[in-house]
Length: 314
Image (cartoon, rainbow, N blue to C red):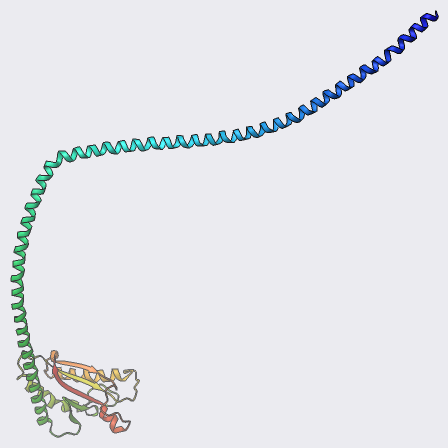
């Protein structure tokens, strides 16, 4: 019995240290395995990172190659299109060349025809040049004739003017003889002047009662002289009415323009009644704008109120 207990006690003591050793070794193994795993993880992480970077670089290179491939394809398409265009143009040039060769003989004939036409045109130009020289000679002759006719016309006009001046002088001379020395009728330059008071009442354009008698010598002188004037002398008896500068405003005459014109027309109408041709008469009104006397006295006003007769060229 004591031996059995001793044997069991000895067996118990021997197991525990072995267990401890085994556990220690297992722990060391686990620690080593963890260290190996950790180191493996570190190197693996680095390897993965390097792989990702390499993959990105390869992806970029692949994209670049893809773009370059697309450009090359596009360039290749353009080149093919250009080649087709050049072939088409070459074919067209060949056709044109063939057509030109076919029509070469026809062009030669056309050129010959054109040369003949040019020769004909040159001949026509020579004929036209000769005709132009002839026309220039005729033009010079005609110009000389025109100048000669102009001289003759000027001489004729001067002669007519001289004739009219002579008849005017005779007309005025005859009037002087008929009228005598009257203070109310006088000569101013180339005009006979009647004072308005001789013919009209104040502010009136109707001939006064004795106006017709006063104008009869004028009618007689006109009738005598017009029978002596040749038909080819263009003459006209101008009757001009004038007033003084004092304004007038009546229901019949709003200004001196109307009064002076109406008085001239009244004299013209009287002369027509007496047989003077209407085509040889003219009436004009000048109002107060051509005074003989610029004074402001009654005598100045009286001198400016007048009817003027002028034999002139039409």
